[in-house]
Amino acid sequence: MAESTFNVAGTEKPLTRLIDFDGGRQPIFIGEATPGTLSSAAKWRIQKRAYTDNKLISIKWAEGNGNFVHIYNNRGTFTYT
Image 1: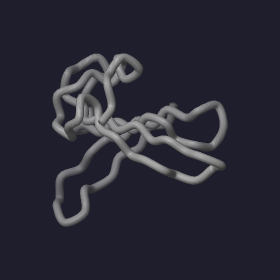
Image 2: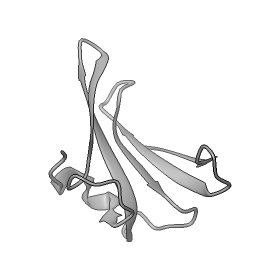
Image 3: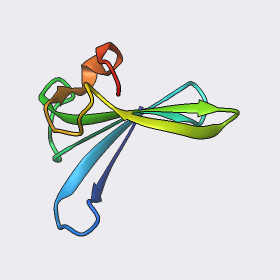
Image 4: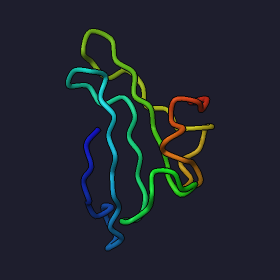
């Protein structure tokens, strides 16, 4: 898992990003939250990426939304749409 802090395009709001890779170089789960947010707090928006032949084919959000209301530690338990 990798962690970075960045600014959201068009705003001055910094976010921390946690990235969970598939064992290789492909990021599967990407979580974003305000800096300092614990991965156990329900303050993350989480996306799941799918690949075919190393090409990104879809990006889906935890429980179908990009709201900052999910727990990053639970990323494998959500439905992604």
